[in-house]
Image (cartoon, rainbow, N blue to C red; front, top):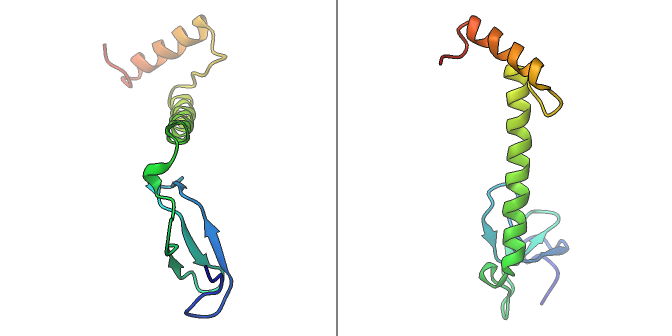
Length: 106
């Protein structure tokens, strides 16, 4: 396959099939121009996202869930002051304050 862009003549970069970090969706392999961002699929025998190993997709899902859990932990800490190092007594005191201020209801 020609490795120069048909639009601007710039060098094309090969992007293998994978999973989008932004959307979490699998994508087929393609070529993209470093200069003008024109993209194209290889003419023959290109690798489709459906051919990706299940483990690659599973690893991406686990990675995304781990990142989401870390963000939720940060949000909980910002709202309540509770984190993994908070002991039972500190937690009880934080909950008393939250209920007392009407932030939480039984």
